[in-house]
Amino acid sequence: MKEFDFLKTMQEFVATSAIGVSVLRNQGKGSLQAVRTALASMNLSPVTNMEQAEYRKWIDGSTNWLLSHWPGTGRPWGAARKAINLFMRDAFYNQYLNREYNIDHVEKWMEIALDSKVAEGLRSRFPELTSWPGLKHLGQHVSDQYQNCAQRLADKQGISRVHLDIWLWLENR
Image 1 (cartoon, rainbow, N blue to C red):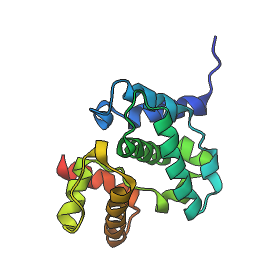
Image 2 (tube, rainbow, N blue to C red):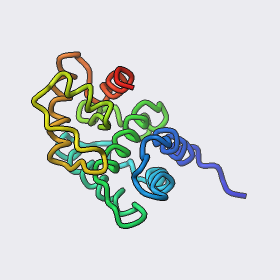
Image 3 (cartoon, rainbow, N blue to C red):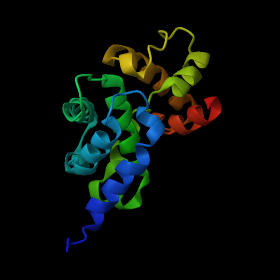
Image 4 (tube, helix red, strand yellow):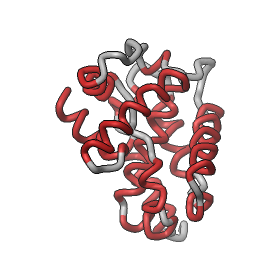
């Protein structure tokens, strides 16, 4: 009988619940299970003592790490980044993972999970934004533009940009 590891099981639960069926729709056959499995095994301990520049390097590296687990030949950077951001948001919201890995100290640097609904909300407030290319074609340059606008909106609202996802997604669903 397999021994119960509470934190490992909690991380698997968060990976599964954060990455719902609609999150990776049309991102390639087998991507949903592959992403959930990879995130369930992701090492979160480096986050514990990071500074801002380290977090940016970590999330960039984690996006590439997740892409290395992507099935098939397509490597949708935007979908991988969305999955990482949703997972980290939900890990932050989970008291057990947050406490274990001190995720709350990186809250102010966490990104909003971008998708068409969030992009629609940002573009309605920042018409100068580049047209939304779709998740499958989203690259880091356009993502950074959207993240910068999200940061401006979050600053105006007095919250961290990671939380804008809830508001913008609900507003545009």
